[in-house]
Length: 297
Image 1 (cartoon, rainbow, N blue to C red):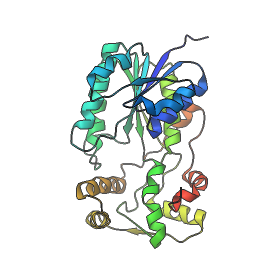
Image 2 (spheres, rainbow, N blue to C red):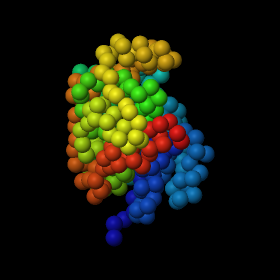
Image 3 (tube, rainbow, N blue to C red):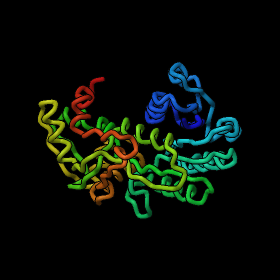
Image 4 (cartoon, helix red, strand yellow):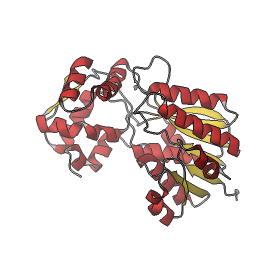
């Protein structure tokens, strides 16, 4: 029997982090620590057997205690996108703390095609975090997550209301992955015995265009939905008209531009290889969440 280890998940009050902790607890093999800026939000996880620790990447004084005694850590990329450089500084603080604490392995949730020249405006944070990991003395697993299937619920309900889905993705394809599958993969990578360095693409099992998605969603809910390709300026203008600040609209539109360029046309077997379970298809995911396609909770 292997010796139990101490595993830490940062951002454990968020969607992916919480699910990763739950998957780790279900294994009943290691000590699992859930880290969050607000440990009070971790009560449900503590009730399932996790330990809770205060952990705030912007308050370095919280990090030594948070990382103390940890063997392996899952650093869930943060959502600090309000000013350039903030998220990268948070990630760097976490890596530095892990090094100082003697952590043996880091798992990091990056983004598909986190390489120079990406059209995605927030990709440089991931590129530079990956570079910081490469420069560190710690073994690491980089998980390049493809587009989350859940993000489609931000636009499809509005599209169904009008019967038209306007995107600038053209005929580009993506390997949409559910957040649940990404969390399962992250938990499996954290709980593994791997100690070297590797970069894995975390994707769904198929490549789909926006037109494919509109057809699948329409078939499932029984309502018409037409995919209407537009250019980037038109998409940005539409989002601004709907109330989004223009800088945020440009960030969102950059994902469609990257899709059109083929940056997300990546499908791998990594989820199944890590977890022993095939990732969900988008059709099955939509069937399980039909109400969300129409904006119902």
